[in-house]
Amino acid sequence: MHLTIFETPLINTVMRWISVLVLRLMGWRIEGQAPAEQKYVLIAAPHTSNWDFPITLMICFALRLRVYWMGKAALFPPVIGGVMRWLGGISVDRSRSGNLVQSTIDAFHHNSRLTVIVPPEGTRGKVNHWKTGFYYIAQGAGVPIALGYLDFARKSGGIGQMFQPTGDIGVDMEEIKQFYRGICGKNPHQFDEATIQVK
Image (cartoon, rainbow, N blue to C red; front, side):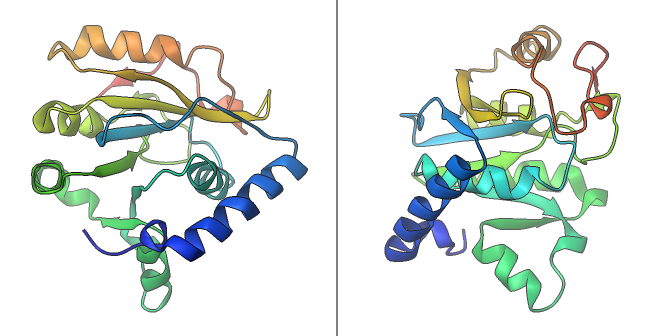
């Protein structure tokens, strides 16, 4: 995996203190703590706004997480793309999702420490289903899923719990969705956990 800001000790430390200060000034509270596991998939939901990205990054700095995150290819144009990769970004070609799942599984197998953020909605727009790539990545790599969240109603965010896939995706997804019941995105009309289906 490529070098990121999270692997740069001095800058990472400075960004942590800046993030803690900014979140506090914005009225946000950080909940949970960094997982003890060295390898896991981190899902971040609900994803309903452009604000999710900077707030999520600040929470990652505050919790001292070393993360990579997946974003659509349009976020990685020349020059700016280099900055996005330094911030942990991995460009995603949505037409090759199967290859992406397997390549991410391979990355987990070849690294002793790895955290990859995957938004299950796949977009900040309104959706009625969750993509299941994050589940199959975790299952294929034999790693747990960290349930991360941003609750704009309470201005709180963090990691709620770790979930180990059982292989029964129907049952597992219902349990994961139950965790997000009542968590409010910035644009709550775009996320209704009661009607979300898997795809």
